Each structure stands twice: as structure tokens, then as C-alpha cells.
Image (cartoon, rainbow, N blue to C red):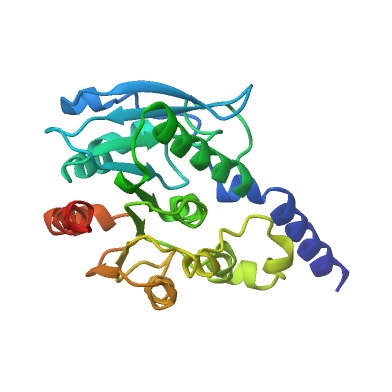
Length: 271
């Protein structure tokens, strides 16, 4: 009986002290691609977060002049350079300017150990840069979050009224719910152990911006019920778009041109 208890406590301690690395497994290597590899003009940016830290970001102008901007926050297992061939290409097809950003701890941004607080700070610093240094009206900003990126995206939508819209792709209701979907986390009191929560379900009822939720019907990491709960809790105007048979990793490829059209109509026709 003693050995199982020791194993349980040891694994629990590992879960508690290493959870930031589990939730934010920033890759140590990546491709060296840029939007230029797609033939796209872009600005390579460093956005200050504080006196010490900065974010690496790309500003990618629309193919034809547009007032709309999509501020995109990526998932937890890749960096800006990994977005080029699929995400950046598809987002550019929407016809809006793009602001793509790496969290601190990722890519060429300042090396720290990310957590919920730092990622939210990164999101706020990027939006502040766009509003104050680039002079973009808040009503022209559409915040998009993918997977873990739905956390900072929802945070911005709550704390900044007047956004053009909020787009949540493969969203989770909370990190607590996502952890509980794995049996080996269910044996621990996850809500007590976790210090990163990204409680999108609690936040969504405070979001007044137009909302678009995109989810794959076969997503096992952030299951469809999470998207449906968020949608049910959200205010109008709201839309939900389901990609049949799409999982967590292949949402964009399975969504194809039909998904691009849904995003384009939301960004350009929401007002």
C-alpha cells in the first residue's frame, strides 16, 4: 500500500510543479519560414511587454487595403514560423491585415516560463501596441484564438469593450475541464492543483463583441461539448460553425475553403 501512495504523491507533485511546462510545451526548434516564403510582404516586430521583455510578432498587410485586422494567438505546441504554411496562408485569405504573435517563452520572444498571467499580459501588450502605436480603432480588431490561444483571446474580449469580434477555434471551456478529460488527471483534485485555468466559460458571458466559435466534431482534446457550452453561455450576436469529422490538429485542413469563407463573412460582414 505504501508504494502506490508514494507513486501517487510523486506524480501529483510532478503535475503541480511542472504544469506550466505541460500546458505550454514551447518547442526548442522550429522551421525558419516567414510570410515571405508565401510571397507575402510583412513587418518583423518586437513589441515591448515591460522594460525587460518583448514579443516577436509579424504584421502581414492584406493583399488589398483593408481597415480590418485579425490579431491571432496560436496553440501551445508551436511557434510563429510553424504557422506559415497553413494558418498564416488561410488567415491571409480572409482579406484582413494580420498580427501574428509569439508568447514570451516561444520562438524569438523573451525566454521565460509562460503561464496564464504572462500570456494574458502578452495579449494585452500586443493589443495596446496596435491601438496606440499603429492607431488601429478597436472596432476594427478581430481577436482570434486557436486552442490554448482562446484563453488570451477571451481575456482581451472581456477586458476591452468595442472589439470588432472574437473568434474561438477549437476552444476549451477551461483548462480544468480539459485536464479532467484525461483519466490520469482525474485521480487528482485538478481544480486545487492547477494554477493556470483559462476559464473561458466564466469569461464568455462578459463578452459583448460578436462571437464566432469554430470546432471539429471529432475533436478529442477540446471536445464539441465545450464549444457548445461556450456558445450557449454567450451573448448574441453569436455563430457556431462545425467542421464535420475534424479533430484538434486538422481543423483548418478539414475546414478548407468553406471555413475560410465563414471567417471572411464574419470579419467583413459583422457590422
